[in-house]
Length: 427
Ligand SMILES: *Cc1c(COP(=O)(O)O)cnc(C)c1O
Image (cartoon, rainbow, N blue to C red):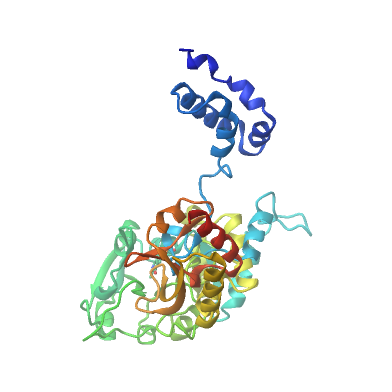
C-alpha cells in the first residue's frame, strides 16, 4: 500500500496553481490556504484523489471574503427580519459602493473645511417629511428610543399604556430597553383599554415624556380603546410616538399603519421609526420632530455611540431620493402581473411537478399584522425547499401542506431568471 501522505500535493504548489493564485488575490491568501489545508486533510483521509486537489479547492472556495450570501426571498414575507429586512434599491446599492472608499461624509469639498456629517441624508429625510422641524438618524429604532429615554427622561418617568408594553421579537422588549436607560415606566390603563384621562392623571413633575408605541406585530380586538395621539398632545410634556415601520406618509394598502407625517400633524413632539422596514432602506433609526428636542437628542453624549456609518447614510439618502425601493414595489405590484410571471416561470421550467397557485403574502418585519397581500406562487414538491436553500443562488421559499411555494411578490422581477435556473438545478 503506498502511503497516501506522500501523494498529498504540497501547500505551496497548490497555492501557486494560476487559478488558485488568482483566487488568493481576491479572497486573501489566508482564506484560500485554509481551504487548501482542508482538502489536503481529505486526501490524507483517502476521501479525495491527489489528482483532484486543485479542482476540489476551486469548487470549495467561497464566492466572496464574507460568509454572508445573497438569498432570493421567495417567502412572501416582504420585510423578512431573518433575511436582513429591506433589500436595497439598485440606487442605494450603488451609493453604498460609492461611499465605501474615502468620501465627503463630513467634509466640504468646496471649502476644504469640516462639514455636517450626513447632511445629504438628513436633508433628504427632512424634505420627505416637511412637518418635521428637524431630523436625526441613529443605528436603529431601538437606538432612537434609547436616545429619547437617555436625553428626555433620565431618572424620571415615561408614561406608557399597559397595552403598548411590546416585545418586538427575539426577546427584545421595549420596556426593558427604556429602563436600561435609567428611566422608570409609569404604566397607565389596562391591556385592552387606555384613555387620555389615564395619561393625564399620571403626569406630574417627574414625567420625562409620554410614549405611544405602535403595537406593530399583534392586534388587540374586541372591547378595546386607546387614546389618539391628538388627545395626548396638549398634556404639557413631550409626546414621543414610536411608529415602528417607517412609513413617512400614509400608504393606501395599509390604512391601519401609522406614518410620520400624520403623527407629527397630530401633535407628536418626536416620531421614531426604523429605516429598514416599510421605508425600504438600510438599518437605521429615524428621529423626526420638534427642532429644539431633536437638537437635545443630537447633543446628548450617547448620540455618538448610536450614530450611523457612512454606508448607512449613503443608502438612506439614495432610498429617499432615488427610485421606488423593492419593498414598496413588492407592496404595490398587481396580482395579475405576479400571476403572469409565475405562469412564465412554470412554462419555461418544463417540470411536471411545478404549477402556479394563488398565495397570500405578508408585510412582515413586525408590520401590519393581519394584512393579507394576495399573491401568486410557483408550487413545487416540498423536497425542493432544502435543495433551494442550500443551492447557488440560495432561495428561501415557504413550505405549506407538503408543497414548497415560491411566492413572487417578494422576488424582484430581475431575479426571475436566476430563480428559474436555481429550480432547474434542483430538479
Ligand atoms: C421594529 C420595531 C422596533 C425596533 O426597531 P429596530 O429598528 O429593529 O430597532 C421598535 N418599535 C416598533 C413599534 C417596531 O415595530
